[in-house]
Image (cartoon, rainbow, N blue to C red; front, side):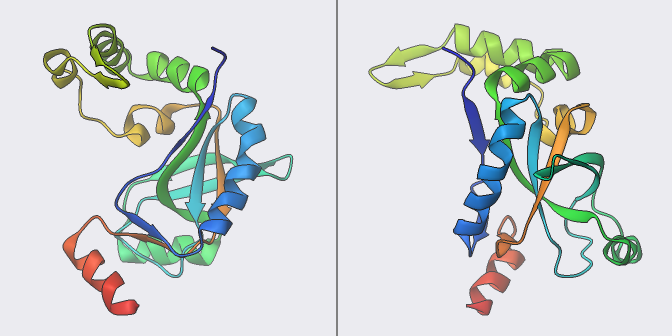
Amino acid sequence: GGSPLLLVLPSDHAIREPALLLEAVVKGVEAAKEGWLVTFGVEPHGPSPHYGYIRGGEMLEGRACKVDAFIEKPDKKTARHFIKEGHYYWNSGIFLFSVKSYLENLKAQNETIYEASHSAVAYASRLQNSIFLNEKIFSACPALSIDYAVMEKASKCAVIPVSMGWRDLGTWPSLLASLLRK
């Protein structure tokens, strides 16, 4: 019932200061309840061509900024320019939104994914408290990230800057670097 909020977090990230992420999430709740698709932008330590960037724009009642643009992994020179200019954040891939807003945006931005996902759930099997999606139907769903499929095209997308000791551990070199920093 209703339209609960979803907090979507990648499984291959490390967050050294989870209390700061929690504070940012609390800031984002009101925006998400108002229909905004909220993402959390990591305040960059320096220029990096390894991350996508988010350019923040107009302030939304002090709690978030409207997203002006998503920029996919720029070269080092462009990343330096972003840092110098300010209002650019690394794309953490962490999102907060209501189920209703997300599904409306998914249907409007990428109906193929919406229909495939809806069908996979409709034909899912259930065993006790577990739901098993219909593999054949779900495997026909295009493999696009939330960023490409929805966020980059949404008109009501907000970013909340956060400095939380974030590290992406999605590659062997980044995992090794994180282990060596301890």
